[in-house]
Image (cartoon, rainbow, N blue to C red; front, side, top):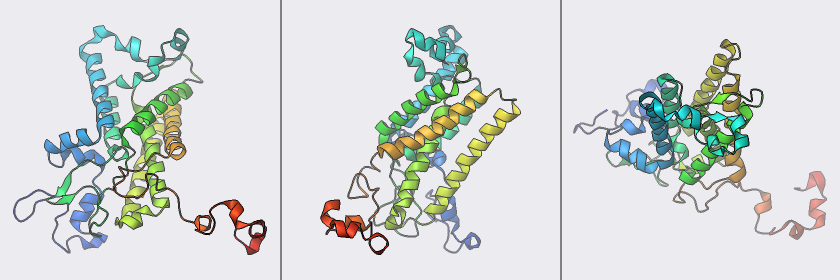
Amino acid sequence: MRTKNGEKCWTCAPVGEGRSLGMDTGQRAMFWMLPLLWSFMDWPNSFFQVCDGDRALTIFVALCILGYLCQVFAPFLRLDRFFSFYAPCMKKGEFWRFFTYFMLHSDLQHLCVNLFHLMDALDLEGVPDLEMSPGVPLKCTRDGPVASICYPDIGIGWNNVVGIMATVLAFGALLGTIKNFGALVQGASSVCFGVDGALIALYGVFLGAGLDQKLRIPEFVAFFWMRIGIIAFHIVIDIVQSVCGSGKDTVGTVAHMASLVAGFCYVIIFLPPMGDGSFFGSDRPYIVNCGMTSPKYVTLDARGLKDVGKGAEGVI
C-alpha cells in the first residue's frame, strides 16, 4: 500500500476500511505478513537488513543454495559421496556428516520448499530493523501504540539458533536411520522442523507468561495459532507423503518428527534469553509470579513447617 504522499507502507489503510473482519485492511496485511515476506518489504534494502539481523538462518540458507548449485554445476566435486549422512561411515570417524547433509537436495523443488520453510522462521533468531511504514518499526516497542501490530523481538539470537540447528541435524539423522541403517540422508528438512518446534516453545512460553499483554500486542494470540496451523499443515503433508509413498519416506518422516521434538526441547530445557534485553528487566523473563515469590518467604524453610503442613487450608 501507499500513503497519500506515495510512500510505501504495510499498515496505512484508511481508517474504517475492512471492518468486516474486525481489523483495518492495513492491520490484516501486517497480521498475515509472515517473516517469509520481510525480505521483500523494501527490496533490495530489506533483503540486506534481514541478512544483517538474522545472520545464522540466512547463512544457513545460503549454504543450502551453494550446495545445490555445486551438485548441479560441479558434479565432479562428488558432494553426495562426502557430505551425505551415511550411518556406516560413523565407524570410520566421518562425524562431519552429522552437520553437512543439509547442503544437499534431490531437486529444485525439494530445495525451494525447505528455503521457504526456513525463511518463515526468521523471528526465531530476531526481528531485523525494518519499518512497516515511515516511522513505524517492525519491532514492537515497549510503549508502542495499541493499534499497531508488530513483532516482539524475543528471538533467541544467532548462537542458540546455531545450537538448535546442530542438535536437530544430529538427532534427526540418528533417529531417522534406526530402522534403515544404510539409508543415505540429504536435505535441510530436519532443521526446518527443528526451528518449528523451537518456535512453538518460544511463543508458548511468551504467551504463557502473559508477556504479550504487558507489551500490548493486539491479535498476537491469533497470530500464534495461525503459525501453529502452518506448522501442523507441514506435518500433515509430510506424513501423507510418507504414507502415499508406501512407506518409502519413513526415514525422512521419523527424522523430521524427531527434529521437531528436539527443537522444542532445546528451548524448554536451556531457556535461552528472550531478545536483547530491551523489553524485559531480566534476561530470562519466564517465571510467572506466584505465592512462593512473596517477599515474606525468602526460602521454603522460612515459611515454617506449620504453613507447609496445613494441607487444603494452606498454600503448599
